[in-house]
Picture 1 (cartoon, rainbow, N blue to C red):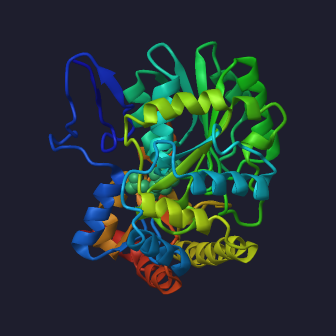
Picture 2: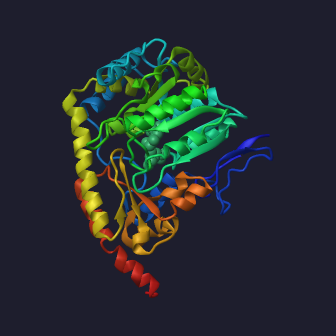
Picture 3: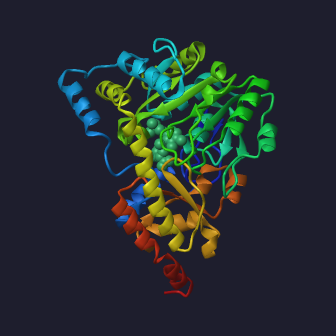
Length: 415
Ligand code: PMP
Ligand code: GLN
């Protein structure tokens, strides 16, 4: 029997299939949960402000929520087609055209998935297996490591280094090998908040073409950039024919619990992903699919508004973190901002993340959990905070964090 080991709580350990049988236990012998679940549970247990797991504390547009309610009342309550409801596939194609000038065929080049998470899983399971390599930047979103492990492929990485978290292009080139089957890019990037410029994306396309690799690009934060333009990888010359683009309604519409995602790209690659996807969830959320179809057509003021609002939130939290004595690293997109806790003399951000909720009443995620062992060492003192929360909540969190330095000193002195 083959299965895979989990690593979410085994900081820095890659997920992998093993020949020995099931091993789903964490280092303390407990059943494993993701770092997001662990920190959210911890935050709730002590009533801390949860700036760990990235979910907004305000729901998305009422018009979309009302549309879901109306769809339920009107009877959209049975299975959607495996590839997704036509209205939503068409709306995704319209969105790709309106914002990026792409023209996917909604019949053959778009599928709807259960969140971006399922699109990522189905893609990696469809395209990779033992002997293949999947290349990602490091730090990487947690599900990438887990699903690459499930597929049996090997996870290779190219580092993103603080403070700006842009890749060294020579290191990126060196990370590609003859076995690189998929290069999985996440832009804008979780957890770092980096947004990759055209020259980085162009190099990815050039290297993928040289090694005949498929590009998978996770752009769930596509509309959440601050003062820099998001460049969809599929729009670069030579990219479209080898690129699968993944996104989701969760972040754009502040509806993370609906789990409606999508994937678009060349028909033969989309067909391969659809084949696997139908045996994962088959299909998802009929009324939610219909409601998101309408949401994607919201006017420009909506799309501009979400980025402006979030940028203001980033600035509030960032001033609070700076005032607390932490070194704040730049965030140009996503829900997240990172700090280097070594400015407070801390060397182990993971240990701090486990104490922070009870210490000051704020929760955050340690960056090493998004890394393999070497990367975990490089990011040992980094902590990720989510700023997708009400402004007053962020102000309150900033106030609580102001006490951090004093509390840490108090701990050192043993009181
Ligand atoms: N990719 C990235 C980079 C993410 O941050 C997340 C989580 N929000 C996902 C994928 C998963 O998206 P979904 O909730 O739509 O499955
Ligand atoms: N994407 C969210 C984050 O990075 C978490 C989603 C989850 O809990 N799986 O915080």
